[in-house]
Length: 395
Ligand code: FES
Ligand SMILES: [Fe+2]
Image 1 (cartoon, protein in one colour):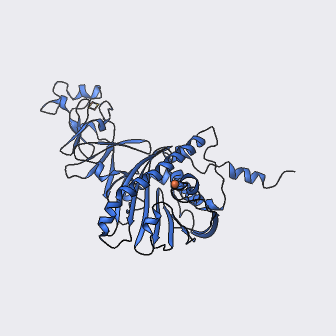
Image 2 (image 1 turned 180 degrees about the vertical axis):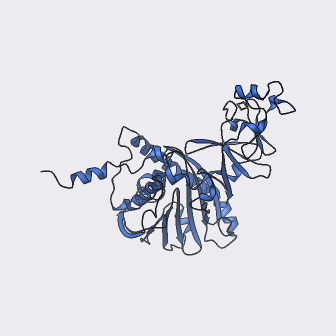
Image 3 (image 1 turned 135 degrees about the vertical axis):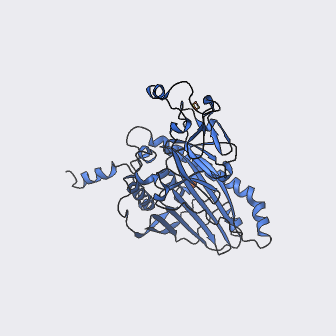
């Protein structure tokens, strides 16, 4: 006999939780574009070199204007569509590598070398120009699409949704940036997966005992109670297991064996922040800002912030340990890159990719998906309501 809930269950399990294509397409991503996204590190944008970046499938060229401020333009010359990012930057302007058209930071054409010193057509009259669809002067040629930019906490952000006064949130602040007690460094990693799957991975404790076995946590059959709080466009998970230990570098951060306070926090649409604190003198925060390149490719800007409990010259100890911390975090990130590739291979294998199932341990992922789906569909109304629930899972 047919179970009366069958049709309902069927409807539930065939709805994709993640729509990879739409989420990473500027014309279909709804309100997901109405946020600031990291385009590069400040240190990557040097004076004379343009930088090519792809966000939401759209190619941009980034460079610094004459005041050193970041500029972002569509990476396609108005003339014959060559990529401007293959050109040069001089005096805050960018020159196309093909015929040398020069653009300023507003996207306006300011020089066309073939027009000579007058910068004006000489032989054809106005009608002759118009008949052939040609322009007389550089200023008649129109403008490249430009995107608003912002530089903050060592990062260059770009706004893909038009006028940035429409941004739904201010750009995310890097944890402990500029705090003298803390050391902060960045890692930039290309991940072979989309934003939703990456945000879920960065907030996911159960995978650590499999993907990072021996590096991070060991399988110890521990029961982990946690509280999942969904509020104000964020999902905060507070883990209630005080004896939780992280192996590897954990011992370095916690020589006194203090209880560890662990929280994971997701912020719409693309940011996660993981904090481990031992007492008030030692901590480790991993902040990941995920920038969509395309459906299954992202650039992740990870800020690692840490503070060590040792008394004597703290900065010296932190600096001395930096290569070790960096090496360790690189290994852990590599393992996540590999598993995200494995997930991508499954997702793209035939139809039905993106249809997920889960248990109590996946409540936080369902919350992330609810927020992202709401934004994908235009982000109208107040969005998913506030909720606080307890869960238990085992690692
Ligand atoms: S294609 Fe850019 S100047 Fe010709
Ligand atoms: Fe991981």
